Length: 251
Ligand code: ADP
Ligand code: MG
Image 1: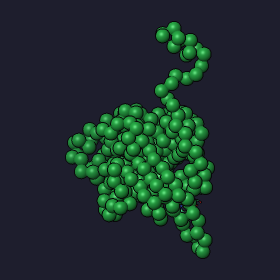
Image 2 (image 1 turned 60 degrees about the horizontal axis):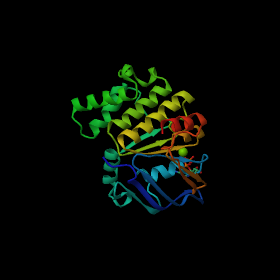
Image 3 (image 1 turned 90 degrees about the vertical axis):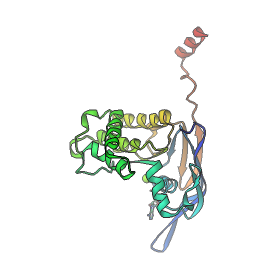
Image 4 (image 1 turned 45 degrees about the vertical axis):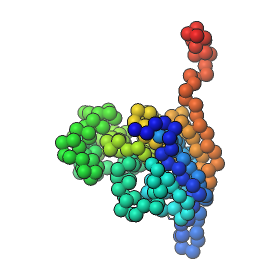
């Protein structure tokens, strides 16, 4: 497993333009980006600022017009199309706002199916799927279908599906925006755990300011430009008088 502070993703000079009718819009304007293993890197910015486009360019879903993405030591967009798909399958987990679950499948089957795509043998796939669902607190929901689950539960199935392959890269695009505060917090804590205990590089796009509290790093994007990049030091105890006095006594 890769250690913290190692680069999982490094991107340089990304441009993406879309043509709609006769007009071109530039959605990424020379974006540089990097993310570390073990970090929750939050990309925050208003709607339309290019967040989803950036995640798509970093994860092999949408080819940028210019620039380079180095991910897990490989030149992502230099790979052949089939290799990019294989890279995503092997190393990337995705969590989206809309859950993207199959309506006919049970929670267990939703998770098993990706493992089977990866070539994991049937019994092992079942065991790992059950473990992943247990990890997100859904052991009682293994045999439920999406229609029988709440939004928060459905998102946890999507997280279990992403985590079951133990991806080194976890991309979440507005994962909490269809959820209430409490379920949003459960989801972001699970993403945080993926970074801390599995060493995944978690890249989470959001415009929800409540999630900032869970970030190791907050990158601000606006109108296709990176406007800020702040590391949040989580090694220090919170600065309240109670804590400080306690520390002094212990010392
Ligand atoms: P965000 O995720 O921050 O809301 P997006 O990356 O989805 O922003 O989109 C940024 C801008 O690019 C928006 O103005 C959007 O309309 C435009 N855009 C995104 N995808 C396409 C596309 N396939 N074709 C044309 N315009 C697009
Ligand atoms: Mg978006």
